[in-house]
Amino acid sequence: MLIGYQGVEGSYSEMACGTFAEDGAYEMKGYPTFKALVDDLMRDRVDYIALPVENSTSGPITRTIDLMKYLEVDAVEEIYVKIDHALITKGPVALDELTEVYSHPEALEQCYGYLSGHPHLTVREYSDTADAVRMVKTSDDPAVAAIAGSHAAEMYGMHVARENISDNPYNTTRFLFFRKAEKPRLKNTNKTSLYIETDHSTGSLNEILNIFSSHGINLLNLTSRPIQHKPFSYGFFIDVEKGADETLSGALEDIREVSKYINILGTYQKGKIPSYEGALVNE
Image 1 (cartoon, rainbow, N blue to C red):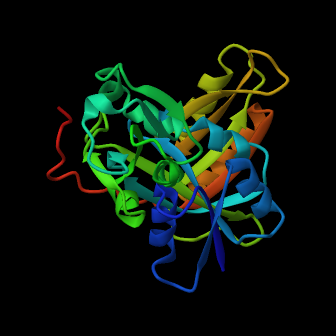
Image 2: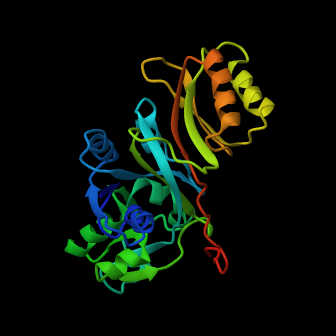
């Protein structure tokens, strides 16, 4: 079995894959972009893919969830990864001597407060947190740094100049693991993700929310996203606290009657949110 993820060895996505695999007979393959990753899933070149879909600091990761709107996929597992960002350099260097810092755009956003406190640093976006560490390692400039997990610094033999630079000490990313929707959905599940488009008439979204409420289904997340080629029209990613059973089936039947499009992206068991005991607030 092959699991795909965006990034390189040492990335947070690879950590999530390790948890998903549970030391089983899985191989892992990194991809340069989320688009290439999703494309290979649909072409049967990988069995599962890991997608970061939400972060407790920066919110929904829209560059990933937007790729899944119209695909026949099945989310089978939810995994939460505690994100411990560190400032990483080639060797010991004074902070005021650093000139540039590289990382994935999501990581940079999650460290916005810390970086704002050091305006002399030029912030550069990079494809992946761990790949930024790898790039800094090969750079001839000792004044450049990367933001990634401390585990990536250890993996690439780099120096941790500053730990705990996330703005949120409880910074956590939620991953969903997808396969192609070719097998029966999982049983004994308690969470479902779906994407819905309405006709945008007055009260259409409220009608859908009322259907969930009338069936006693708790909404966990609601994210609106623009519909491509339909300016200022929106679809909705929705997570509900209900697995595959008659209650959910009844609600979805009612929703199909009042919506233009619905795609069930997966029904799975809720993941375990990490313990935050001992988390330190960034100074």
